Length: 465
Image (tube, rainbow, N blue to C red; front, side):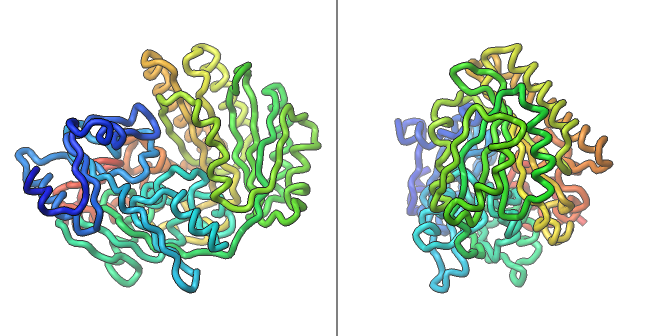
């Protein structure tokens, strides 16, 4: 380890480092924590090649995990006895002088980005949550609140800087290393460590109408009718997340609409867009709509509720083709039954995205590594446990629920959309994650990581020809 210390500018933490080591192990889910042998926090891109060389030169080689935001509920950014390359010190964000692009280092959180864009009065396609890492979010596709107007994060990625398994640091774009650039747009973190992203920026999309409209679970049928009618007039600037949850203190099954209405000057658009939810057949038990000045503010809206949520968290998700009352009702029934059976798991929730998918379809299936480009939405199952004893049941529930959604969606529409790599846990079939793009991804893996140095995340096997 002394030889490594002499070659890098950053920090090296071990179990003997005390609270600094413990703090660096923390993740969004307590179930994601593993005891690393070393946590290395590079201070410069040039620190990373010596770290890779050190890990691969050991006998046997040490496993390498890369940690950006640590928001994924798997152990992909952690390692039991290996090395974690913690990018947290590489979090600089720089807006171009013409404000048309923004350069973001690989360890930045979206909070770091939104602080810059809010001040400059521009916007970028990013996560709705501030604590999500830019890297993992983007490499999986990047579905965000502005995707209705501007597509995915990968559709707005202009270039990237990547540290490869052999230690080279390369630029990737449509002109330079085009295969690598194609692969990192939806193929996950299997091809190198992306230490810098350059995104296209967009004009200020605010003010934003946001807040909460909540209903008793007894209103499910009426809420679903409202959604069906609302979608007929939805524009790319109108979106919401629908949740099935049991809020304290009563923990009764509830339905919540969490809207984002763009360009909401003087609150006029939100009044019109949200009128069906506030004044329709379903009667809200809670209604609070406010105007937020920027995405930075909105990205912190859930802070209070997340602060008290159980930290044993498992997330899985998948795609669905379109709104279906039959699908949503079936999921509701299964979720209610599960959370009724076990008090320890009643904080588990279902999330449904309702962002206009039209912009996503403008990019071809093979133009990036993301395999789903027909109109679609995503959903997620957040399994939360208050005890270790209930984790296994939560794991089974999240897995069975997303499998049900995938199969039911295929039954209703004739389209099997497979899995969403950003919400996988690694036990899915790669063919179901990457579809027709898998053979090309495997060839690119063989080119850029033939020895599988990057063995965490959704692993892609190299294809040698």
